[in-house]
Image (cartoon, rainbow, N blue to C red; front, side, top):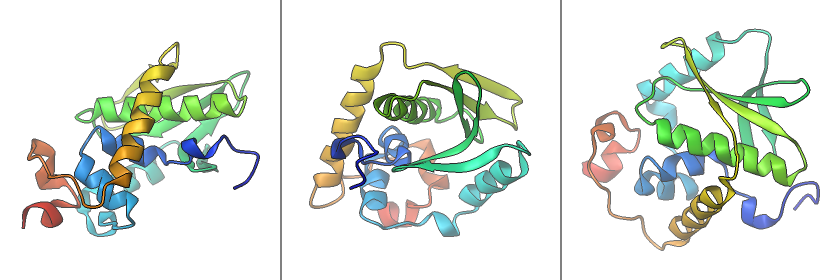
Length: 170
């Protein structure tokens, strides 16, 4: 592993943190390389929104295992995540917190902003002593990834729009 990045226990993706708070079954499939997103209309809509918003910004910034939607450079780096709606706000917030935590481990001071262009809203996120919460999420992601088989799915409102719906429920 590249020595420029934090220790291996942080070699997880922001999407995995996000999925932990949406569905652990989805997280397990994604972590095992079973990706269904490429054929999901809701994922396509999110990608379209991301591509057509925020012109002139440096988009899809890859730093180690994290892929930030876009950044703004200044005295403090702004990490921006573009999201379609707020129904998964806790997952969005934890993904942003993980990015801040990861960057802090690299010695980079940053703040995060969740962008909801369809709603014309933003939400500012700061790490501010929430490291333990992020560390607990990292540990839980690793536990789910280590399972031999996927956790039993739990039916929620989000299931019908999920790219993994057929794997879980058909």
